[in-house]
Image (tube, rainbow, N blue to C red):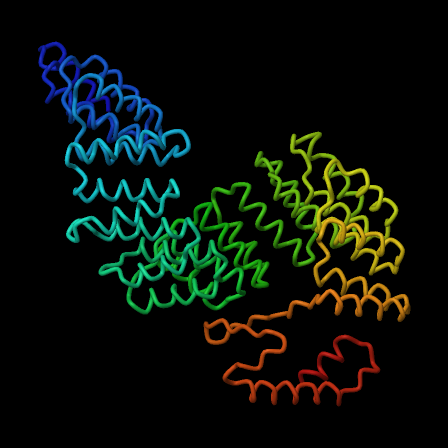
Length: 521
């Protein structure tokens, strides 16, 4: 940059800097080094003092602001360009539309007005202008306008970016079936289009389909990019697909991909949810740059694996390293305290939310505290907390209180809690089943029959449970009562043999090691 400034000084002395070609080259070089804000600022100063500006110079400066995510500056310059009598061209509009997307709520109108100007000046058929318009309408939620624009455009103008922009628009609107139809129709796909579709499935909670598409992408010879890998790891985490998750991790190592915050957090989450908490800790330790999401993910994993003390130590380390916890972090750490009965620690952490970190506790934080007190048998304190909450308790809070009633056999408080759930129309099947179990634990069989009869009268049905198992890299789902699996006969026979084997083992000896040896010998 210092050499460029020397060249600029020479051009200034010789008087050739007023030549728009010379000044334009200096401005372009500064904006290409725009990772340094000082360079962008220097380019803008030179731009303001350039007497004879060309469309190229205007575009160069608008592009710089657009690429550095300064939409206000980019669009202010765009308006100034038009006011000064310069007509925008296809390059101008591609940068302008990108800036509109960066702040869609504020600049939606500018984008719509720009479309009319694009049509008036005849730039609509250019591929990157078309792609910018599709991207803009998709982010606005005007998917019908985007589809109309796509259908009316010339076939030769539609490239892989055009198709992907429209697919992203449908995914953003939750129309995943339409997005998949378009994806299958695409004449040419690249790693970005594959990743968009995979992440679309993940965002819609269709994790099995996401992994199937991820496997298909590999089978067809496409290399997953950063976004595709994160989407695949997220799906593996939710489905417990450890084998595929490990393959992705090996792919990351084999290709020497940087373990950045997003990728590292996705790996931690996957290993923690697949039961490999030690591996999750090793991934965390390898990360050079850890943010609140990485810390929170591991704290959650440690809590779910019953390692509450380690979770609290990590929470303290997080604060020592000046990483500010967020609302989710406190939910995870309070859950960790709840699982192992660390009442004092939990109460201290809850108080520190507002006092030290300036975070107002939400209903989920109160739910964690109710669960903490309830598990510890402090039902009166839990009831008082629910009553004195600054907001209405939701199903999570009342559910935690109801579960505590079941554990400690408090039928009166259980009945009162269910009444509160009924008043809020939150009495789903699990609530009635839990109340029935409370009565059963107290041997109040008449009340059990009454609850079950009420469920039949209200036509309340228990949602069938389901489980997932990974076999040879494929995830298989089993739903209670469903016998449609192709290998159901073999599965039932194997379960019968296992059941008979367990029944044949005498469990009189309570020595855990002896029992394990008997089962697996």
